[in-house]
Length: 190
Image 1: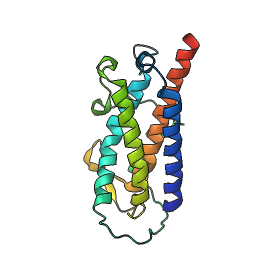
Image 2: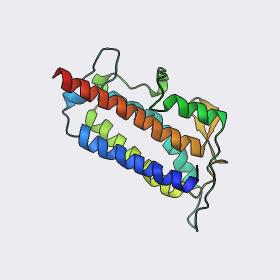
Image 3: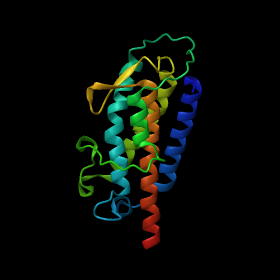
């Protein structure tokens, strides 16, 4: 994979995510957004809140790396992306095609659905995804193989920037698909 092409593809995928949310979830009522398909399963809004909690951490760290670039940048240099064991593992765990289900760590588990404001959660989700989309324009000036970010598991476990960006978009797509399944089930039982 090449950095510049990967950045372009990730931006396209994020645009598709934002379009899906606007088309599929924005028109829903609070009751529809907060309805749980089963007591032990997440509602649509809980899926989005989980993404807000998990991705805010990484996006903030990417923002710090981009801000440290300074103002003057010429042309971004392309590079072949390299992945390490940590990156491959984290990407595998969140990949939408992976059948593996792991419980979300407590720090990124959404609060009870009754404690969430769906309008705020949706707005935060759109804001974070739009920010990540914009950061991809600037992140191409960073070295995606050498620049590392702390993970949610602590500063001792780092992930390469390229792996982190791929992981974030895959994680978003995984839980967006989960939210779409909840919406489909609601239509089935309505």
